[in-house]
Length: 428
Image (cartoon, rainbow, N blue to C red):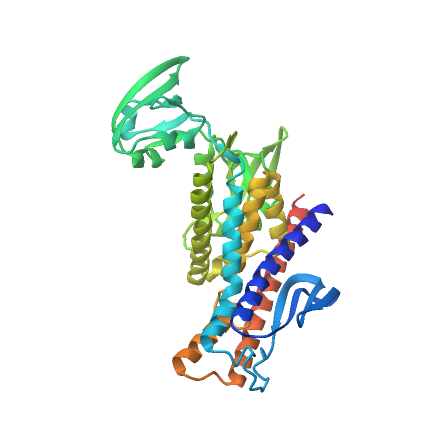
């Protein structure tokens, strides 16, 4: 129950930030605001201040700012109405909501980097090595130092490699520390798993929501020991067998010393020919990392705009490959499940999830779909280019199309959520 309350509070904050952006921009542009509501439907409570009715309503699925004359059917010559404002002012008002979500998300994510960050890693034990690196490193070597600095895992090892320079590495081999001087190392050689890779067992880490693995009720800690009739000894063999198999995959899983059979249907990946089942590697090493204020700002900013780029890339991929939409869209259950996982990892991850939601809200609202902010921006741009507004009939018709599209998308998101839950239930 407490998790649901927290989720509703977070949603309320997101809506307040978004609508607050519209509210402030409208005021600055000389447009009169009549109502400011968090939620829809019947108000829980409301009050009036400076001519604006503020309310908190029962349906916590959004909110709205009611501006004077924001209905295309309203015929008025008053200068303080939305549709009598200049086209560029309407763009500012429409853009302000998503922009405020971006700024708030950025600040929240930067704040998250002021807290200790949990990081996970693989053990720095070499599984396979070839090419130039094989002259120095052997399978089974455990890397313990890189350029005189102790390393705790595989990714921290990569972080200490000097690209294009000589590197001194200490490995534990057959119980003995051995110092290796490796000349002219290219970081690309280390990043290419064909050249060198760490030992990774076929143990499941995170399960991606609304994927075949989620629907088949795979759990963290499951060890995949067979794909079809083929025994697999590590993550590499397991993924290779899954990729080479047909769309239907039979897995033999070891869970609590018992073998379990699971049948899954692989899922398409946007902008790729690969198909997945939706599991991530188990990262056994946990460490805590603390950043300076300067590092927190840099990492937080990079993280934020990385998420923005990732969202737009994902939308582009879905447009290119609509068939991959299955499993790519989730509703409130997916959001709640993902948020809970983030929160369980500490306050830093919890704040990053809040920032992520703000960015997703920004990206979605800027889509050029009528009834969304992006649709209002599009209409206003067209008016600026044409020198006159689209007819009321045209705007209303386009808004109905946009509303139908959004309702269909919401229904699919709910269907995706609950079909996943039903599939998990039936797999037990």
